[in-house]
Length: 188
Image (cartoon, rainbow, N blue to C red):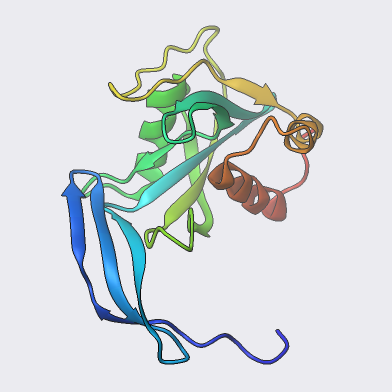
């Protein structure tokens, strides 16, 4: 990085403006590197997130999910929250089962990603899961406020075409797929 890292923005006071079971929204009072005072919006999830990356001989499974904030359906990797007392690996197995009906085994954490570094302070663990045999018709069991469809399998070439064609636009999914691609060979 030329010129060194940018200066930090300092929180003067955390100002909580909303809280529910999913997290807390802050409108913090901050001080910029130049000394200017201002406000900064920040969301903190109530627990860390997890992204499940299901892989098998058939490729990588994504699920179509309707996302209310964006107002549409997106092809995504299954994801959710790590429950209290649960490891990221167990959460990935649970989320995969809930959102796709698939059973994942042999969890391996690939890394940590931040969903939106300009707004969300929480992180997500990315966990690769092996799916040894997919049921002919997996039955997802999503939560009440989730709307997901059956899993769709993609080879590496299929994923590249879907990303280039704008079919895969979820930032968490794209980041998790990049982590996967940097740790293992292509699935053709």
